[in-house]
Image (cartoon, rainbow, N blue to C red; front, side, top):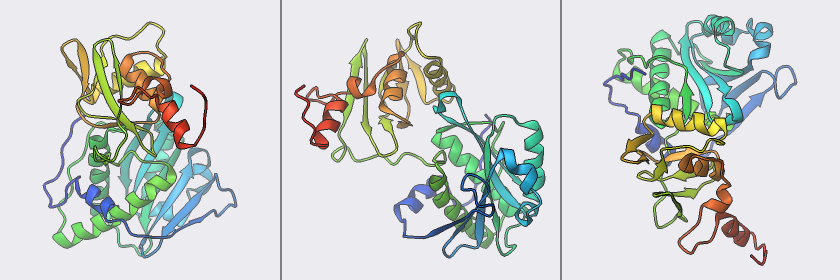
Length: 308
């Protein structure tokens, strides 16, 4: 993927700052057809925008709504096999509806889309181009999804005031994504070493370290993984290992692979499988410095006595 970002005063790291300054807010989700799994209109307190979540299957029936005729930025989402990683495409349109119609005909992978427009006509073509570029920069750096985009566009030339407005709109978009189960734009916020319960896998000459979070399991930068895979490895683990190598998350270092960044897996077992090149039970394979398994640690936290 070609990666090219603008030179404005805002940077991908701004998102970490925004997330560290989170404030309470309220979200309203309106289901115009009475179906919570259908079209959803999302509004937020003190925000001049709205988000529209649209399953692919109903796009022909709802494309005449006024929101589809406005400038907007959108994300197409399709789960990969076994739901290991989302596959996404980020784009913009003026109007956004025409672009979604084109993707309905030409892109097969996506099962739902979310797009964002303003409620006061304050977003123009340049604004949504800025939002598109910023979201792609974030997704590329986070490496938590497979991107269907071929490249990352340059940010358009905006005044300082317009850039600030677009970035404010972006911050609201980013606060909504996790509520939709879409966390692919978030960099991992590393927990301090003295506050996390670190676990490791040591086998076949490799040492991997990580810890459990509310979102999944983080493998720590510098951890190592085996180069070879067992013949019986599940294909989704093999595909994920290949994907992580193609994105530079794991790189060859002598006779093993090394993690170049912190990486969040959806489960301890997926993390253990990628590290060891085979299907694995992460609750058994990940152990702390006292040789307690993750399973044992979880049971102790719940006050469960197993006698093991």
